[in-house]
Image (cartoon, rainbow, N blue to C red; front, side):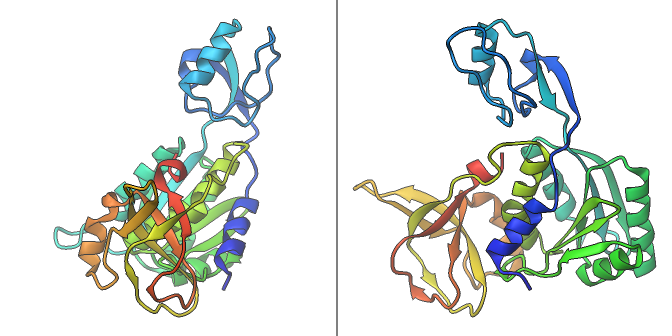
Length: 297
């Protein structure tokens, strides 16, 4: 089992930027990553290669006469769900959420699939997705134990079996014929947290971005932390600013909440805080804060 920091680094190091680039009209470039440095036609600076282009960058480029710019092509994703078919009583929460998360990073979903929780069926689905070669990365939802066996049986390599974090402990990372595969936990809240913290740096690196880890600030928590043993705990929180200008956060979901309530509050969080192992009671001091407005773009 990997510590969180080691796992985060391993996920990012397992991939390389998508090398192909294309030249597109300037007005279509916002949200795309600049693939190469451009020659300045005046004394004004230009965005460097690896910059995620924003409207302000477009203005700067247009002011220097550029009408087209080279950008990395979009990262293409396959989503594969492994479980029983959804029903009215047990609908599929993960697939729509994961597709929305992929789109928030500026990647695109090219393939969607579903197989029952059977090792042979999962093995065949993974091989088919990789052999077709249509996608740069495959995200599997659910059945981590089956995923590990199916990957190895297909000739793949398991790079990360578990991460010492909560939620998200059951996330796995592998490679099959040079392509990365990530198996996310079946629980929607755990899949959400592991995607934000482990997968988004990986996707940014594949996109060719210069900055793959957004800034992590520190905030004052205003909630009681139950004892959680080993591993880093990541709480969904809502951020606020006190009258004296101090940033503080309150929990967006209680530690003793039911799973349905946990999913219901997924959209309420402004970020995640990292609580160190064995920290319990009323926390003393400031803790790392992962701002979702930065980590999900």
